[in-house]
Image 1 (cartoon, rainbow, N blue to C red):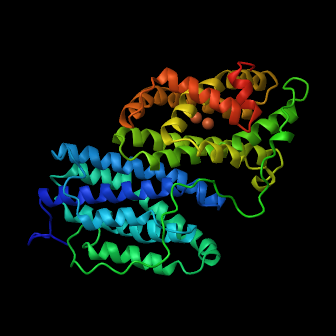
Image 2: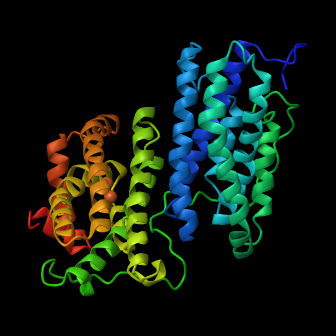
Image 3: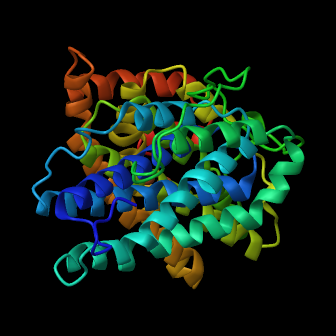
Length: 406
Ligand SMILES: [Fe+2]
Ligand SMILES: [Fe+2]
C-alpha cells in the first residue's frame, strides 16, 4: 500500500492519504446531508443526523493535522476519480442505496484504511496523526459501520435492486486505487441506468401511513390551566424539530461554496435539531405515546424548500430561532415551578443550544448573502423572510412567537 522497504509511508504519502480520507469523509457528510430529508425510516434519519456531524468532526480533525503537516489546501491534488465518486454518491435512489454505498462501501473502506494507517505511518515521529485517528476517528467509523450492518436488512428488503448501485460505487473506489489511491488502478465501471439526481428533496419523506399534522387541529393548551395537556402538546412539537434538522441538512447540501467552518457549524446545527427531536421523542414516550402516534409537521420543511437556501438559513437563524427564545425561558420557569424537573432539564439544553444557533446565524447570514450575490442586508432579509413566514407557516406557535406573545 505504497510503503517502502521499511513497511512505512513517508511524510508526503502520509499527507496524500490524509487528504483522501478527509475528502471521502466530507463526501459522506455531504451525501448524507442531502439525503436526510429523503430517507423515510425514522431510526435511519436519527442516525444519519448524528453521522453527518461525526463525519464533519473527522474532516475537521484531519484538516487540522494536515495544516500541521503544512498542507493548507486539503482538496488540492485530489484525483478526478475520487471527485467523480463523491459526485456520484449523491445519485442513490433509495435508503438502501444510500446506506449500502455510503456505509457499507465508503465508510467500511475508510475504516480499514484508518486501521492500516496506524501501522503504516512512522508512529514514533507522527504521533499526532496516530492520536487523532486512534482517539477521534476510528471509534466513530466503527460505530457507524456497525450500525449500518445491523440496520441494513430492514431497508434492503424494502428496496430490492440496490446491489447494482453498491457495486458501482465500490467499483469507482477500486478504479481510483482504493481509499489511499495506491492500489492498482482499474477501468471505471459502467453506471447503472435510472440514477437521476433526486437532491435536494423538495418534500421530506416519512414512512407510509404515518399521520401528518393538521394545522386546524393544533390548539395550544393553556400552560397554567392544563399543564399536562400543554406539556404533551409542547413535546410533540419538539419531536417535529426533525424538520428543522432536515431543512439545515438540505441547506448544507445546497451551499457547498461556503467555507469549511460554516459547513462544520451547520453539520452541528442539524444534529442539535435531531437532538431536540429526540428530547421530544424521549418525553412523549415517557408520557405514554409512540413516535408513530404523533402527526408529522412535514409542511414546514416542504414550504421552506420553496425558498432558496440562503433565505431558508436566514429565516431559521435570524427569525424563527431568536423569536423562539422567550417561550423556552417561560416553559423552564413553569416546569420548575410545578416540579417537572425532566421537562425543565430538556428545555434548558434546548435553550443553551439555541444561543449558538443564533450566533451562527449572525455570523454566516452575511457571508451567505455575499457568497450568493444578494444585494440585501442581513436586516432586510430578516424582515422579508419574517413577513413570508407569517403568511406561510403552518404552525401557529411560530406566529405567536413572532408577535412576542410568550
Ligand atoms: Fe431546536
Ligand atoms: Fe435551533
